[in-house]
Image 1 (cartoon, rainbow, N blue to C red):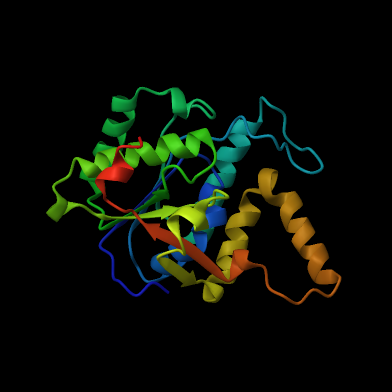
Image 2 (image 1 turned 90 degrees about the vertical axis):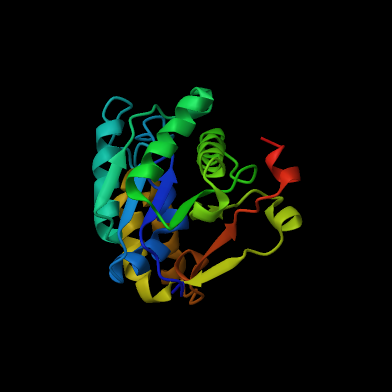
Length: 231
């Protein structure tokens, strides 16, 4: 488990299930230790490609299904303060920049986090991921350096290791494997087929544990002029 004690953690991602894949184990550890967590999910992922396998959703019913999946995932992790921010999936990149920064600023001012977790700008692949990360970083950058919460970024672009190097934090989450599995299962419309493949792999005798359930990696945001000028 991450050793540093936290006052309050703010998590900001654009889609339901973003939290399950990358950070649910770490969040479960903090929740189990009694650390308050606020999760701001910007959209309901209503444009998600998957409608279940076999399909059990329609394009019309998917938003409500994903809303309920998100609630179940938050419950599995131990998140008690879940915020659904009401933006539309696949349009976050087109939101007004200042509106996005003000949304993040309001959240930060309200919950006063000691740690914020989001995606790492320029290494998050999806346009909604990138727009979310930029808004969070811009909001934090406006805070006096002495008062800024720490900022952890999840990065998974193909060039991450080449350009950022090894993660700053690699957190062992094997003690909360079941909670992470339950968080991923909760997002059944999107993760069902992946978990079926994982179960099949295990049935075929592959005893190596998937790294989904062994560790989660983060980069400390690097406050330097050259990087900040890129967005």
